[in-house]
Structures are given as C-alpha cells and as structure tokens.
Image (cartoon, rainbow, N blue to C red; front, top):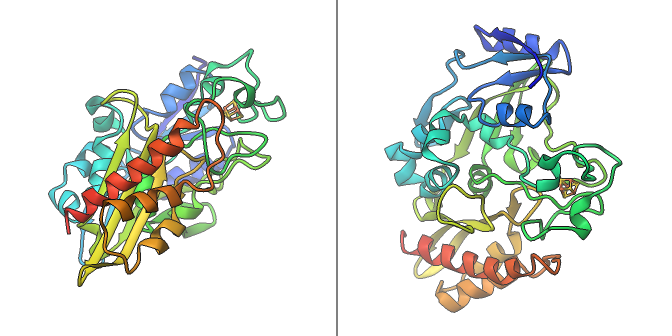
Length: 328
Ligand code: SF4
C-alpha cells in the first residue's frame, strides 16, 4: 500500500474543508471499504481525514421520520429495537450484510458508497474495466458475468451495486443529507447512485468534498409490515444474488400501499414500480405475489450466465411480499 497522510477532524466543517482541498483526499470512517480498496490500489489517497469523532452517530426513531447518523455503525442500527420493530426491512438489510466484525466497524455512510464486487474491477491488470480505467473496455460483457446486472447496465458496464442497506432505503424513499464546500443539501436515495451509462467510473451524485451526515426515512405505516429477503450462494457473509425489500399496507383485505425494491440485480438499487402499482387493490395471495415478481423482472436483460436470476428474482419478490403480508 502506498503512503498517505492522516488527519483527525474535530467537526464536520473542518473535515469538509480538508477533503475539498484536493481531489486525492478521502474521508475515513469505519475503513472497511476504503482500506479494502487501498489494498487493491483502487484508491490511492494522498491523505485520509478521520471523521469518527464528529458525533454523527445518532439513531432516532420518531413518529415523523427515522434519523440515522451517517457514522452510526451497521450493527448498532441493525440491533436497535425500534428500527427492528417499525422498519424490519431496514434492520434485516443491515444484519444480513457482511460479517459481525465488519458490521461492528462499518458506518452507514460508507456502506451506501461501497463499490462493486465485479472481479474484473477488483482484479486489476490485465483485465479491461471501464470503471477502473475509463475507455479500456469491459471484460465482463464477454467474460464471467453470472453475478452481473439485469437492469440499468450499458455497453460500457454491467456491474451490480452490491449494497443491501441502500436497497431497503429505496423502498422507503429515504433522504440522504450531505454537507459540502457549498453548504448543505438533501438527496433522495433514488438519486444518490448512478447508472453507468458511458461513465461507469462515476457511481454517485456526491460532489467531491460532500460528506453524508444523516439518512432520514419518512414514516410510513407500511414500515412495520416489511422485510428484506436476500438469497445468496451461501447463507452468510456473501453478497446478494437477488434480494428484495418489500413493504405493504393492507386495508379491508386489499393492498393500499406497496413498496418494492431489488438488490443484486441492477447497477444501482432498483425500484419495481410496475409491480408496486399492480399490487394496489389486490388481495395479496401467493399467486398474486408471484405475478408481481414476474412483473418486477419482465424487462430484465439477461446473459447466458445470469439468466437464472430472472426466475430466482421473481420467486424472491413473491416470498418477500408474503413475508411482509405476514407482518401486517
Ligand atoms: Fe469493469 Fe463494469 Fe465491466 Fe466489471 S462490468 S469489468 S466493473 S466495466
């Protein structure tokens, strides 16, 4: 690993100023993503700014919204009783990710910004990878793409976004608050991550120096009847082959609110809006849940290696909806 300078920030303003000073400076929170990428030489910062003492680790579950500090640890939020009761999908998305040791270290903000697990991206030379080296090509298009995306890909990149937490946040229309050199702003979670297009190296809408300070989840009655259902090659410490965050509200026997987002199958957390609309007014039973699953994956663009995810995904959605219904 190359040498870098270390600075411990005392407050958010000075942290932002220190990072904004040069493109090569990075924030350091739990370090579980950044150090990983540095060891692979995918990140080579000249300086890291330690933000762990900024106090941004609150977990507040109010009637109007949930407020989560960006430096709250994954395990603390996953285990928080009110989060687990009122938003089980959020809690489950956290405790089904990574390992206990990693969850104890990793911050929520860092988790949102984790980078793809595409082996060509992480493998370095001699693999072509537009995300790592723009313009070099994409080895995955004709190579190993079993884990790659069915939605949101381009001719330049089909890598999946690997996170679970962001997928659950998307189902609840969460907001990400940031502080940057030009002041504060709020970004809908649906606009935080970007599809690759012809610039796959640009993965999120944050400007350099902007620091995620809080994540806010607006209140919804569907929160309690929710789940994060994750299917992977092994039962723990693995990324999703397919996952679904599902939440429903049922009145007089029919669905009056449905929220559905998909993970492991797209280049960014993916909302299944057509399936949500289909469910409204329906009596939610297994056949209807399966129809919603088929609808969620109707437009999937598959390769020979990842086409199994289309059937698997429809089943995961159906199962997630029935689990959510069981919590009404
Ligand atoms: Fe790189 Fe994306 Fe292609 Fe993977 S899918 S090799 S990350 S360009």
